[in-house]
Image 1 (cartoon, rainbow, N blue to C red):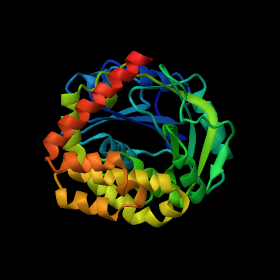
Image 2 (cartoon, one colour):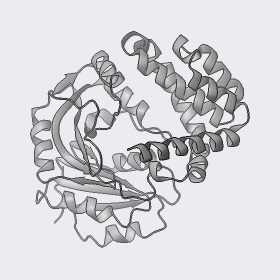
Image 3 (cartoon, helix red, strand yellow):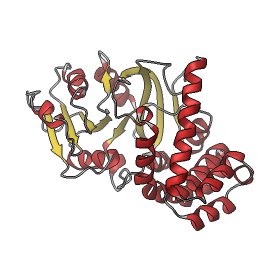
Amino acid sequence: MAPAARPKFSVIVPAYNRAGMICRALRSVLADPREDLEVIVVDDCSSDGTAAAVEAIGDGRVRLLRHPVNRGVCAARNTAIDAARGAWFVMLDSDFELLDGGLATLERRCDAAPADVGNVATICTWDRGPDTPQPLPTRDAMLRWPEYLAFIAGLTVSEWFNCYRREVFDGLRFPAGRAYEASFHLAAAARWRFWMCTDRVVLIHTDATNRITASPPAALARRLLRDAQDGAADADAVLHAHRADLAAHAPRLLAHFETMRVYQHFLAGHRLDGLDAWARASTPVRRSPRVASFVALGMLGPRAFARLHTGASDVLRRLREVRS
């Protein structure tokens, strides 16, 4: 089956070493018989047969794009966005699975969305643990920029499922480097309304061995060091663009990004920039014992900081597991 000339949905699937689960994600989408659908998989230079698993699907609605070098999840999304033709872009990660009727639910919501809504977001169901975001929304909410900031500032877990209107990407992309997507979501919400819907259309699996949360401390430390340069630049960009609005509408969120700025600069080995970020932060951040520990560890150098921090985090995680 081939996709329509102008599909309703472009399902965007970045993948790196997910040969054992990519077919589960794709089949959950392709179970819908609609023709106004394309699925764009971007293999981010996998070494485990992910691309071959995608090619074996044999459905004309699936397109496979391949990076010659590993560039990170946001770069993979950008590659797919540049190639996508749909009216709405469904952001399906390779360890996600659409629930039965998921696309039909998204279609109903997208058709009902006013023209200034850029993101139709839905609740995530998990194979382990509670649904997200947390606290769980109990009713739909169509949020403008200040309301969006207040909403995410009040969350303890800010994971939801995203379906973006095509026009959101006119002049806007995910971070080009290895930073994650927070700056993109903020930039989109500053320009478009955000619709948090209480539908559940996706199940997130936690069986991938290369999930960040499953990484052993040494591997996680290497990953943090690799990504820190881009993370620091992204934190700088967020605060440059949104500091005033964050201070006015979401001081807790401002403190989060200020903390991340300090953390990322020290991980990147930018001691002076880390100290400057700490000195320029709001009072709660400057007085935070946690941030002070980042500064103290960061002055030892990035490798020592990463090893000590990830080791301590692993100990705390294991203690929580024992207590639970």
